Image (cartoon, rainbow, N blue to C red):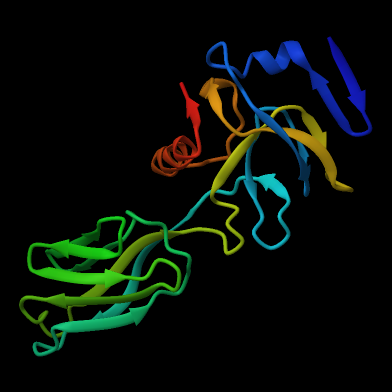
Length: 208
């Protein structure tokens, strides 16, 4: 059984290939925007307009400067260049001393403690021993989209061509689905995908 409605195409046989079990697989009609998308595309909800769009991957940053050691300063405060910062992606290092965040805004490691505000990127770290003069203090982290397009909210249940105009289409909001039959952002990293899958599980969407 199949049918078309404007620029939305539904094929129940192909839709069933997304399912990872016998159900249920609740769906809601949502406004889709921005691109010609295939069924099975992982979707995010744009916080600026409430429309569903293709998920975007996180962006990784390496060795961003937080400061430099001077043999005296123990505490360094900096606002990272990009936000929102993705929890559990932050590492701050000064030579061999490094600390990582715990997903709740606390940074810790041997010889280092600190905090990170994920929303603003404001970072503060304190070393047990002041870094030697000239030692680079750096931060590695990943950041997401300001409109929350890095946060998965559902799976597109039917082909939807929204490249030229918004369309209404069914979006799966819960249930078990086959990861191999879903469309993720190109070149998404394994770590980014793992975080996205955890976020989906928190919303009742499970991938196998």
